[in-house]
Length: 425
Image 1: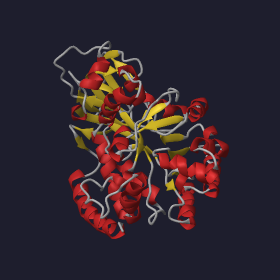
Image 2 (image 1 turned 90 degrees about the horizontal axis):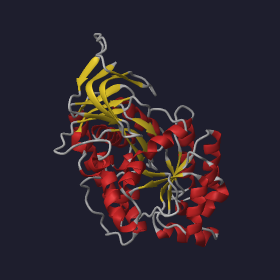
Image 3 (image 1 turned 45 degrees about the horizontal axis):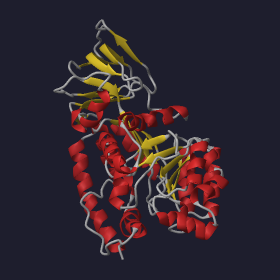
């Protein structure tokens, strides 16, 4: 049991401020208790002094890529990409082809540690490693579990590396879903044959889950779909029944017609926005027009800081979207509703972040959103509780040896980059 002493708790739904002590029990989806009297302390109770600190629900990332964790600082490809397809071919597909299980394991630990230290206790990840598929999701799950970060994983099924690789992706997905909660991962329409898509949808129905798929991240996705299938991407997915799978996540959604937006809104599926990734790849700007309220925030493997993602989304949205401070906070928190609506575990009330935020101005329910956008930062994350377990204490992860993991990862990154160089044509 953990007791957060003298806490100022901010309810993530109502923004109400509650003063007092908070009792936190360990386990999935356990409630928290508020008390004005200090409870009796036993030997196994951890007391954390939260005087002048903020306590609120921890954060979640709706679209991440573990496989990109060792990319920071990597050399430029031999050929400079001239469009989005070449960015994939010369950079990200070269990277995922070069991964082995040890690299995946290191990437998962690095990602989970970064998430935890940024106050993120739940991650929805979309993984790819076409020459190291079997067991890859289990490796990621084990690393996340060890650090203490809850997860909803999938493998990125694709035909881009051939039929046999696609079959292995389907098999890995089913083997994982037999034992774990998860989604059925799909790359994008332009790398998926009809047969593979049909099998993926069958899997999602069999295990009562949804698909996690990249949608119209670049105009090429739509052009290819129309040339090959004589329909647009969302029409293709609707005809296959993907829009009927209520747990499905449609990621990016940049190049959509009004008709496609209407289909998504009517389906009530969730769309995941990834602002900084879109800017980095120069693929275009997200616009929420006519998509409805089910918009989540992800980082697309760029980083693991959701407060940073919210700020970037808000400021960029002033140019290309309709977004104000209540709306950016709503998108930031919508992931919790998605997880609850689909009965995914690991995101209960006993997932908390303690923020050492000493504001020079008044902080209240009425002006909290101003502080959220212009004041709060990941540097203020001091303690993090995941499913009742203290996984970050005084800015340090508690469950694993971070320096040892970082040293291990640095060595593997050099091997990875060399393998990529050999593949970058």
